Image 1: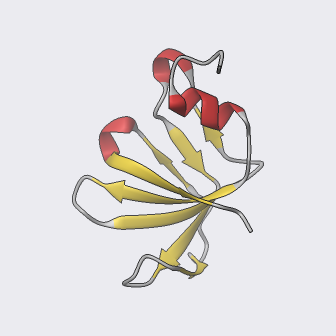
Image 2: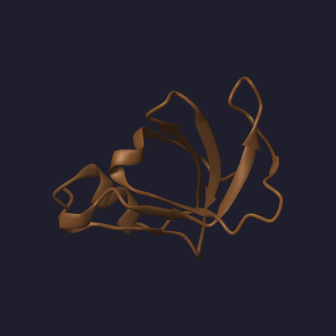
Length: 89
């Protein structure tokens, strides 16, 4: 049993690298790499996330290439509906 109160806290406390697809409120998608420099808030401020590297997605949601000159992005819980987490193979 996890000592964390939420699945968000449990997952991000593991600090595992992964690919994330952010499903924004307007229906659009943003892809990114969540690695060593990325941060996800836990506890009472859970849901805020900094993704260190943004990626272009194709029409099927597959990662194509890094977004040029991007230093990542910060998302608030009110910016997105849900996050899709993919393995870092």
